Length: 107
Ligand SMILES: [Zn+2]
Image 1 (tube, rainbow, N blue to C red):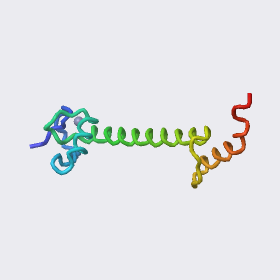
Image 2: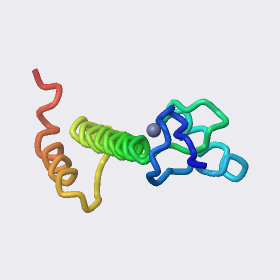
Image 3: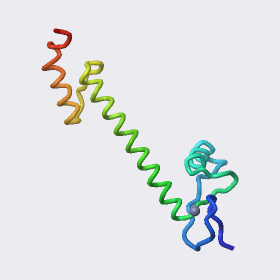
Image 4: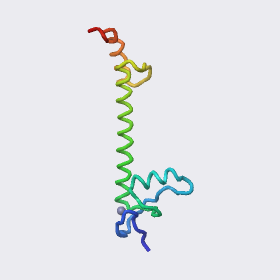
């Protein structure tokens, strides 16, 4: 008997994506269920919804990383933090701050 997608898709015979084991990884399972909008106790989603969920995870991760990176650039430019790492853009921001910090508050 084909298994149904937790989001209500009819059985299609395609590969199903399983959620993390709720007993072994309860936090991970609840995160997946909340993101997918799945009502418990269904633990599988179809391939189409699985791919959409993967895209959502990747998009969210990229947004968080990009936001964090931009925030650190802004903190370097405002002098709130000092950067000494290997990131080219962060180093450029630090050089810019070092070069122009004497002009701050001189109006
Ligand atoms: Zn589905």
